Length: 212
Ligand SMILES: N[C@@H](CCC(=O)N[C@@H](CS)C(=O)NCC(=O)O)C(=O)O
Image 1 (cartoon, rainbow, N blue to C red):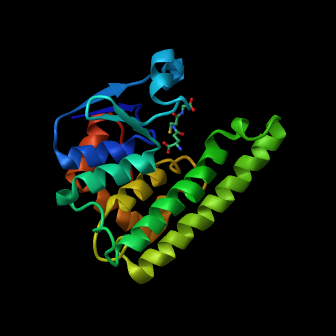
Image 2: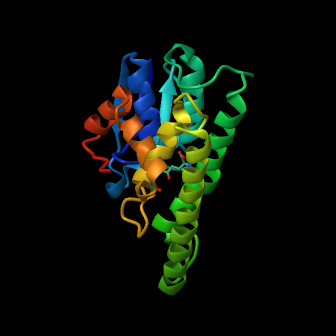
Image 3: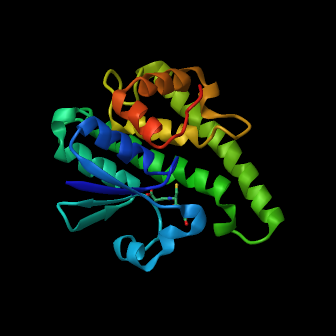
């Protein structure tokens, strides 16, 4: 039914965990991004941006962008309960968190990890990385304060795909001066997500760990 193009520890983590929770058969196609396999002509036909993840569904249909894949899969398999019903009260914060995590937190992580794509010159890149770390620390502090007031999950009482997404991004901060998990309520969220069977199986399949 589905094919997911992925690489370990990448933005494919959240879609991969959701596929595990859904429990339908799917195929994983691993790309070695260090070797540039994401730029092969065959893969560029699927995803012209040359990035992972990409999902192929119903044989020939293609969707890329991790958030879009998460939203599509959770809508298609509502029985898994990883997204609030369309129009329900939780739906608005769910969409808000998916958007914030993608267009703000993930973007700052790109500044931190791929600064050379944004600015030339090692000094400018070092400054961009420093600023990105500072901004990321503030973003995860903001998320922590939100969880303290309105948690334990991002949308309150129920865990959804946005929590998987946040925990995936938290993993990308492990090497930063102030990793996301140093925030107590974010730390609790990470631990809760690590106990989810789909997320745990995804980590195992990708042969990666998420220390807390
Ligand atoms: N906005 C995209 C970003 C995906 C992305 O940055 N993927 C990285 C891995 S986390 C990638 O494919 N990097 C390889 C490259 O840029 O050549 C998404 O969320 O799907």
